[in-house]
Length: 295
Ligand SMILES: NC(=O)c1ccc[n+]([C@@H]2O[C@H](COP(=O)([O-])OP(=O)(O)OC[C@H]3O[C@@H](n4cnc5c(N)ncnc54)[C@H](OP(=O)(O)O)[C@@H]3O)[C@@H](O)[C@H]2O)c1
Image (tube, rainbow, N blue to C red):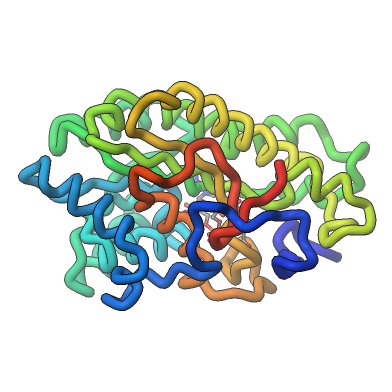
């Protein structure tokens, strides 16, 4: 039985995807000074923000207690000097993840945030407002697939779509809305929505293509909706220094995808890349490791 994640995105020369003009490498390793020498915009983006503020740049990652979210937080703190807010709905799990990063010498703080709970979102936004007064990067990473989605498309209960949309779509909008004003307090905000390649209508419509037998109607349509939200946020920021983009993390081995083929280290790279793009970076795109994906 395929899972929504259990497939490999085709290599560049076989794919429908195009190389993004702004992407200088298919794998942006943000770790080394060599990388920074080759990708000066990454450094410029961070240092520009730092130079305007006495505090470091602040990033909030939802669903950051594990998986791609936790690794995204780690890389943003370790490689880009962010103070990372570990958004998690469970206090014990979120605090443990923040402590893990702190033990590595990173600036991490737990932020209690259930993206499906309006009161929790409001409390979290107020806390960030009081502590920092701005937010430089929001990574809407929390997402899930419900077991009922494993049925054939027409047999999936409507409630499964509702439950999936609650987290993958409506929660993203609620969180983005609550933090919008804080993002606009940043010199150059970066909003990253963690989507999936199976949210691409073009890829899913290709009945002979790489995702030909991977049909999860609730999850895939929720990610397609998330892509559309992203384009709207990008439009709202079209004449500003802020940017909103959607990404596919890859077929990543996590609790949600035990058969994933790539590590969380690699799976976090696209979120990190889009969270740290410079002024010349894209707005309103969908990408994976520097490769533009079809909508
Ligand atoms: N792994 C892949 O191959 C892959 C491929 C494409 C896209 N993605 C996307 O990447 C993102 C991260 O996935 P992952 O693989 O890292 O998954 P993961 O390890 O299972 O982590 C998912 C995160 O989302 C949170 N979450 C799940 N259900 C929630 C709910 N109902 N309410 C609030 N928070 C909830 C989890 O919190 P708890 O620990 O409290 O449950 C956890 O922090 C998701 O948006 C996923 O759709 C993943």
